[in-house]
Image 1 (cartoon, one colour):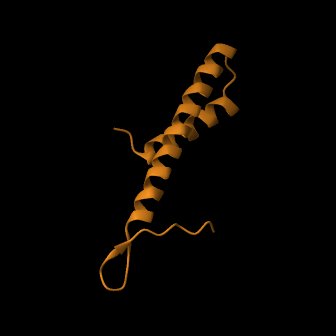
Image 2 (cartoon, one colour; image 1 turned 45 degrees about the horizontal axis):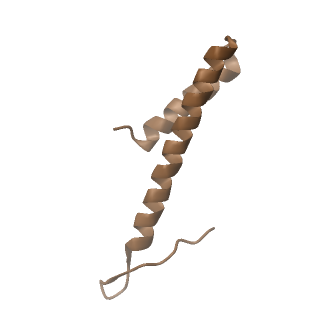
Length: 72
């Protein structure tokens, strides 16, 4: 299983290669597709984490309550 940190690191590698390394269109498109997949997986992981945080907001008495995260 790949962690979000590994996905983001791979995405950074892909961006650097696309910016700095001249390559054929087919190779660039393949890297771009991989980058989009990494980005989608990372975004999905963040959405799941946000949902977990919302579910596990602890109240002062030790009970748990569902509360949305602040947008800021």
